[in-house]
Length: 109
Image (tube, rainbow, N blue to C red; front, side):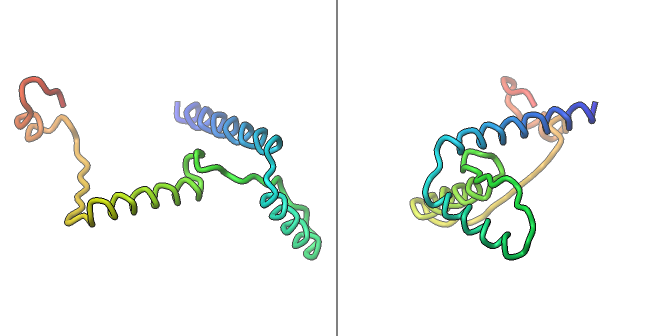
């Protein structure tokens, strides 16, 4: 089962990357072309063959652009409502008696 999940994830991720690669072939921006030219010039000096240049969009989960966008979103929230006084994170098992006992009868853990 674990192997199936990993294989499925890799397929989905590969399809997402292929989609982005396909879009970038259609919409090349001059700054991206200059970046590719710069990389090719550096590679020519070293004498190695570069891989496929792929610039990940902010819509690609886990990309540096997405992380930067999330950071900027968080900073804009801090600017509007102020810094947080306290940040708590708690992970638990939802079937604990302490949690079930403190839920109203309409809620389910």
